[in-house]
Image (cartoon, rainbow, N blue to C red; front, top):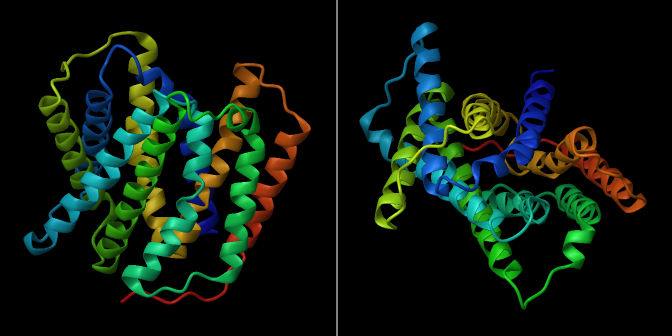
Length: 295
């Protein structure tokens, strides 16, 4: 039951953030928006820890991995997602992100010796096929002659960085460090890194008081960061990185469901087939056999 709750929370929250992120693009530089998001996320976690009297200290000898994981998961990964969405639609980015299942499985095998099960390989194929069907009109417009290739390249970099961040989270989990504390510190470092990138690249440190920007920032910081990452790291600890990453296959279904209500999205037979493929892959991914425990 705990796994089902965590899985549903991650899918619903992060699936909705795909529809919210575009409101962060425009008048404020991507680096600065990412910094604001995770600074607020970190602050909310520290406040939560204080109110619930949770331990927030991290042993110094283990702090290096917190910094590395935070920089990858809460900064570099998101910077490249935002860069990508500046060149291609969020739907095409979602297609690329569905590869996270495969990349997480590959890195788990490389770093921790966890076998990538044949069942999960099949689930990944169903997932990628499903996302491809959902966003086929955007994929069909793919051209090497415009900025699409640049956007896809940024998205691929984002997926690899996100996966490496997941590997860091596995190490932190193996040390039995508190999730709230790890994420609070990690998000703070992610925010600092993003501000550093903004300063080095000469981006203006400004803020937009536009209602859509402020509300989307608050949602991304509290729900999309503080809450969702807590659920995701706990899920990763329960079912492993490859299976936890399968949530990314379901994000577009949530995003398109929201779009159906607020933007009058019209479902096609191909999109419905994509949902069926994705749900089939989801069933394959979550009906698991025993996995090797990482020591």
